[in-house]
Image (cartoon, rainbow, N blue to C red; front, side, top):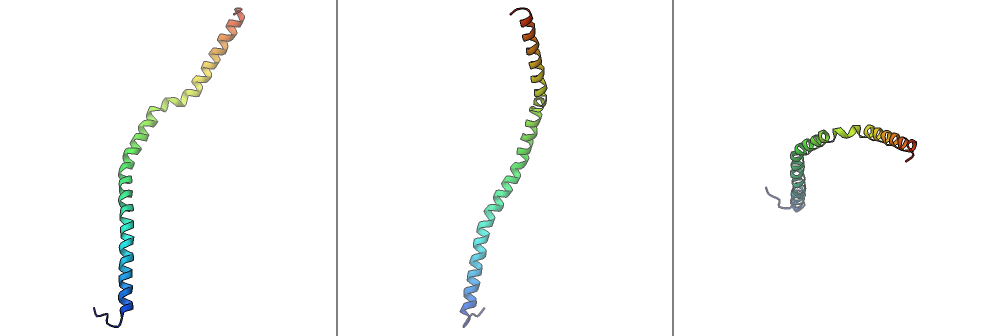
Length: 84
């Protein structure tokens, strides 16, 4: 290409090329990081599912506490009646 007398165009092409290279240099690491996060998401999900299985018994904890409190109250009443 002959840019004789069109140095403004040449400068524009150079600036445009530099801008494109800078954008690529910034976007590529972001895409690589997103791919790593996507790869790790599967293991994170399986860990969370295992945690859900391991803590499933806790949903009945309030009922257990209520039953324990009722037993304690009954024991206190029995102790009071026995003079203790």
